[in-house]
Image (tube, rainbow, N blue to C red; front, side, top):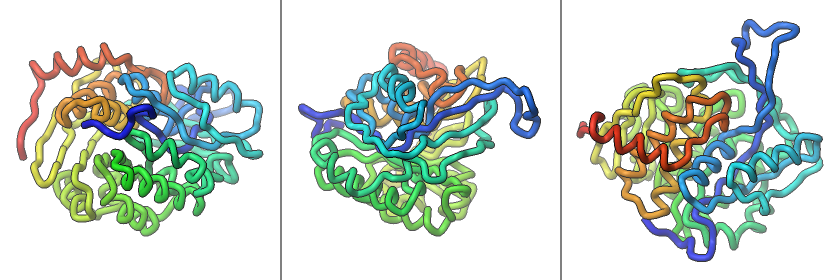
Length: 330
């Protein structure tokens, strides 16, 4: 795939960056004196870091706060190879979350997001980024971003419509979070976004049950396509990926990681990598293979950006997996 990114960015990522407080102790067992470390994550940053590592010129479109962690947050994003020159500031604190080690993707996070800087994202910001959006190869955004506030919901729709109208690619992950939004609101946003997508990446059973009423990956993909999405990628943790493109269904094995540490952000890593490779001209099959390999490698680190694999490692794992792995129809 080639997009309108000549002279612009290959990939833009619209969303929220979060302060991540990570503990190796299960949250239910946390007590006075539990050790923790601070890093930075959020689905937008995870995807942006992966896109940059995959070789794409990548910029973050976000609103960050004015608290003491804002400067180290931006330094971290920059160090991951993501352009932060278009990030806006708001006189609010940054959102944050607490999590424990997670190897299976069973998320049990505690968030602090009320009145966060990220929740001030609005169509006013989208208007200020219009030239970037119309000149980009692709935009990545998610249901999480759309659920932060009513204004962020409108911003997600406006950005998606702008990129679609300009002929760019849109990757969207519904990423349903019941503590942020209800299923009816999430479905409504999904219904508006799905026809604009070049790739709709979603999880099963979590997203599928809440948004399209099934825990069967193939049925879920068909229901997402019925909403207007042409290409749907359904993930199921370490299990096979299901790819449905215009009704042609294939399953793809995920390369195993022999030493998993934490699956936080693995799905975002997939989306960032696959989107980057599509914009850079790879076939859909190759982009999916690279996305799966990068996601597998990413679980070797703690937190959403604890391990962002360099593309040569991703490509090597994808190539090795082609020889021993499998993809099949049905």
